[in-house]
Image (cartoon, rainbow, N blue to C red; front, side, top):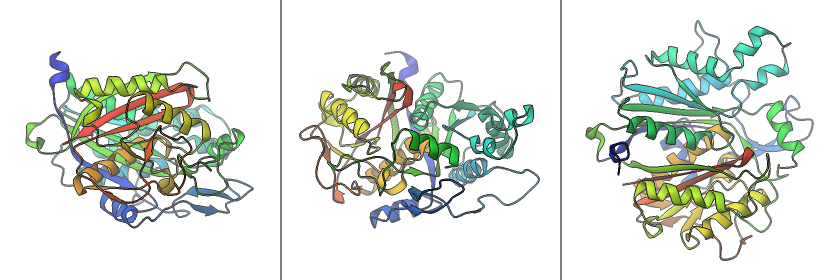
Length: 381
């Protein structure tokens, strides 16, 4: 094994900022009570028809007004990063600290109400937002942007692990966020991918996804003083090369990412105690993911999806769901898949339908997205 792969990466701190709460603790407490933030909305600025989604209150501010006119997207990132950094002991002004931003659409909503100009092109650029966020905190290194559809959050974590493995950095702040706009909602409506009710991942009656707003931040480090913390043990990505919007018909490619992530973590399938699935509740994604889990030999491993609580938070999803899963390990409680009653794929996945006490050491987090992208990461004690 190379020296690069030998470096251990520890989770120092984290934050979830969602309509359920502004901290990880607040969010996990709501999930333990089976509270969902997915509700029906009648917002004609986003859609002429009612829709189900997880949204923040209209005009809610997350950062105090100051000299910079931060967008909602940037405010979410700043607020989430600030909470995660608080008390972490990580110095953002250290050249050994890198900032990674993950998002699918960033400030794309600015296109809806402004005429196209060179200034607007620059303002909607993800790199512009990343630079503003980095400057707000005083990061010394150029921030890295990861935008690869719905695996962006998980890919940001994998990118951090690889960068930390080189020794170039000692700490990585990985933050992801997305906000729901008319542009984004109409795109999913055009695919007929949205459910007319709260989504039901892996359930026989699943009929589409819900979208959600939110942000998540994970701070990672190779410093041995964090050695007692949860570790990021392995990760891998793959691509279906199948269709720009339709997932693999077999699940072989996601299964390949799972296999490589386990190899990277030096773990067997028997050592995975539960799976945090992507679980969007669209028929094709659930089927593909169920196939991949079965191919991987993990069909008996307890699995959950958190989309019924948060909706699909796009670039933040992989981070939010990883953080909740870390809490599941710490608190010995597996959060159930809300909305699940009857399996869509018999014998392929074991979906957790009730709060379950567990003694977990390791978990697998999977993600998939448009363009056929797949990612898998392994966290554990």
